Length: 468
Image 1 (cartoon, rainbow, N blue to C red):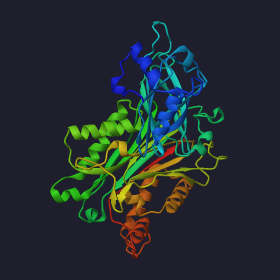
Image 2: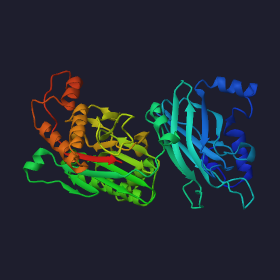
Image 3: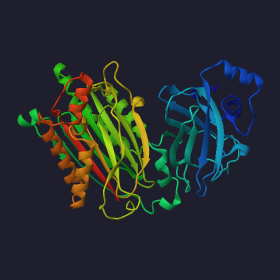
Image 4: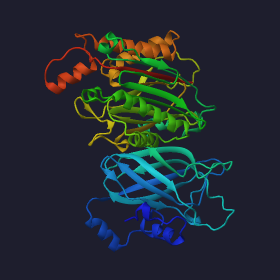
């Protein structure tokens, strides 16, 4: 089995050799000895994962430096394996390097952590530092196939600027859609960065509104009650958006959960403006700073990061805040107008321990961690619409109604601010209608085996983004 990364001696030729001997097996390198086969058979949970490392077809993409790969699934993580590391096993431009990694069964794969290690080459003029990884493909032992898009530089880019040496790669939400992604098919590669037109709207619980509490909505951020949101961009071509829903019940013990959700969004914004491009690392950054500040409370969160240069959305969701990504038909998606019928390309599932008990980040013992987030990545196309909101939206407005409102508002020439407000007010009205059939009433009827009617009064937050 592989040596743990903490034991790796950076730059040591002996350490690299140990990794090569113990950390990986290549399809083309060698076959298992009878002793190794017997050992694997005796460990019933040890199964093979066939991995393809696809280096991009751009100038300077190749590298002879090794890479460290760790798989993460629903049932745990693998050990770390070193791939490549010498000229005979280098990652050359526009090539596919194939390996078999042995691990316990991990369940459905969620992410891969890949780290570029120091090259064992002693030549100072060696140009192996920069590596352009297009994607990693994994064929699991259960027959499932996974694609982890990357399309990014490691170490340094083509012009010699230093870049990060490790990234979390998120599994593509639907591999059937990746053939249209700018990451894979040159015919659909973006000729210029995506432009983002976004707006958010937050309004407090109806009882708070009647008591005179108002939401605060500004360009790039806002809050209402315990809900909060932000959207921001950085110089790396990244645009990010987040929604957090603080747990109101903390007020019963004198804790302002609204402060927790607002600070959570602020730290996410800071991570983005510092240049972070990894959705999980943004969430980890925010969680770490909340702990350092000893902020009390808890919150659900949905975070989305858009690479406007590549046309890709990566998301991390904890709890019942979520998002819907809407697109148009293939014939219309390259159109510069917003006309055409929209349909749901992806809908994030809710993440609950039980009905009414969503996952949440928090200070309390037993709170969930950033690593518990549901992660996904998917291509974006011009004309796509992203709706991200708290459960105040999704508990009171059915997905079909959201699609209808998007089609109606955009067909009439409406802007994202008008769409966000229209969705928020529609959710507000449904939340106070005791006779309405809502997603919450349907779920409650199923959970408690009784007939339940009406909406769910709550804080409501909606952020809408249109990509062109």
